Length: 113
Image (tube, rainbow, N blue to C red; front, side, top):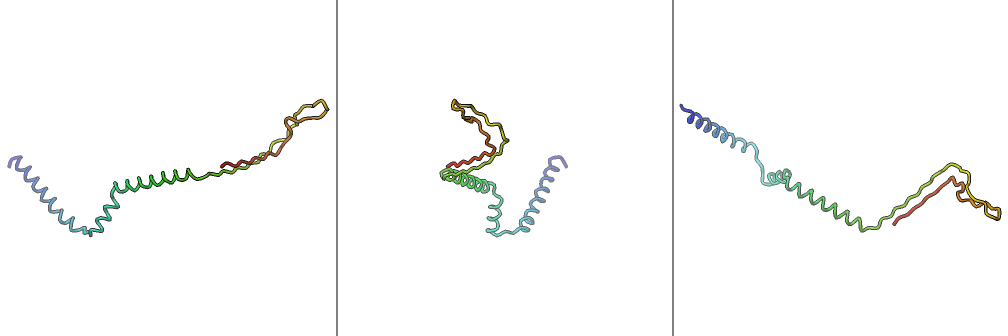
């Protein structure tokens, strides 16, 4: 036997083995049309991408809708500082006018609309 016949015989055996296995593999898995469609929908990357794009579009719409609604922010705060010596000036009528008084408790509120 020459090299061409050995190669042809090997290819024939490989094809017959592969074709012999195909019917067995097809027979071992039987699906209805509904099951096949369900599997295709579950494993389709394009459908998953389309769903993800739809979710992203809905998020953008929600963000734009939220930006048209009024926003209210309320803040409050309290700060306790150390006692300081009041700083001020004496006016000609001998009265002390404080520039920086001793205020140990500071309250802060803010409301934004």
